[in-house]
Image (cartoon, rainbow, N blue to C red; front, top):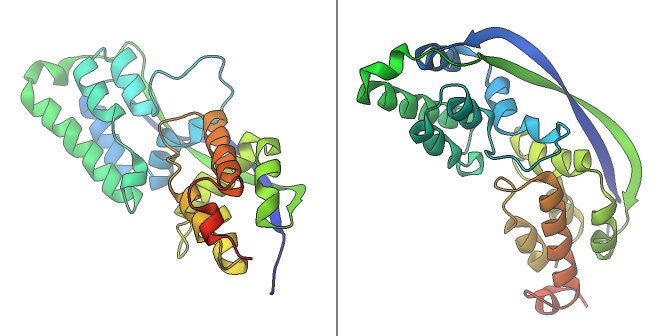
Length: 227
């Protein structure tokens, strides 16, 4: 069997300003339609890598600003339930966000005139990638290696990997599919882990538990593991 160890990488994000700021919902919708798609990505995913000392109230920056900057709980809840993993590409997500905002603007003329308590600054992120030197030699090592991965590694391999052209799958499943036939149960267990409505630490725990359950014979591990 031709195998390659899984080479664990780590990453951090450098935030870059787009120069666009919104102080009203109308400005917000206008800028949202023209900012680079990397900015949409950053405001839905990128801020997870920023240090936090509390549980985030909202999973994306858009919903958070609408709630606390514009004080619009109706719209913030509509934006908060959007899950970017439901969209095949971020342009579709952007269109849905803009449609929701336009519907809100059309529902109440007063919404257009409300000035935010503080502006929303559209930023995008540049990913800096580096080698962690950790190598995972086999699927059996996954369960023990997963808790030791940094949150940056989890982000890079399980979230960021999905936006790469042609693959659009997390790196863990890509590696298993390419080099380790017969681990369909483990691949499915990883596919069942939803990455959006949790923190990176919680996501790492879920991945760890999925691997451990599989090799403990849970899920369908014993039925699909190669002899």
